[in-house]
Length: 335
Ligand SMILES: Cc1ncc(COP(=O)(O)O)c(C=O)c1O
Image (cartoon, rainbow, N blue to C red; front, side, top):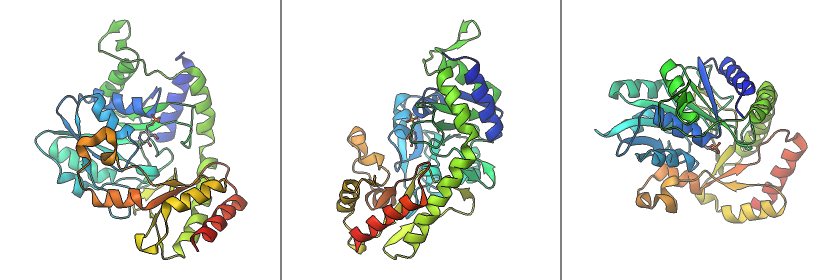
């Protein structure tokens, strides 16, 4: 049931982020869906978003019968930039859905300017970006709409869950109604959903949120050990924070140069056999069967990054000796 613990979690989330409003929902995907609905994105509208993302980013656009227009990421990086997005704007474009991928902030101010210039809505998929910063501000604090996930893999989890932050009163009220069957007060005002978070989930979220700094500290330590290792080896390219970004290291992704001769699938298999969960890089959505109409689209940087990068274990409380074990195994396999 959604009750006072949900309200407390929302209040604490606002305090942490510095946003005026927050609405807790049942997942990050539900958050994205409601954000698009609240901005009245509908059939035949185009929404610019990256392809290098978890499938839910683009699925949420499908939920409202709009069309994703995939933007390539920067070379050897995981984020899109306003200049590349602008080239994709047409008369049908209604929104830009940016993704702060694995915690790395996009140029939020640059996208805000772009959205204003072309009269577009800006939605932030911040599913991976709780605890991440942009120019010293917390992501989602001054957003028109930012969507977070509390899936178990995320830094703050509620088992399953999500949150939307906004600074617009009307948007807030619309999303609150849409989350609960379209009910506002005692009136049905929209065709709504059951995307409520329960008090049980919110109680977990409140505790998790209070431990955030400890989780972030641990992740920065893990990432700096990985950085030290990979930056000494010219076969790898690490992802760097842009001058405006302060990542939470939701995941640690490293690019492996194709000319290094390292067989990524073989490496993953051997590491997994040694009990280490290594995974291939982030999905390229336009290459998935469920987006077959986009399979022939060429997004050079997205495909390169997706095919030639790996994700290393990052979780609390991964300790120094375990990270050394991971890196020793990796070294033996690749040398
Ligand atoms: C970028 C991105 N967007 C959306 C989602 C969806 O969040 P959820 O699993 O809470 O529905 C995820 C989840 O991993 C994600 O990584």
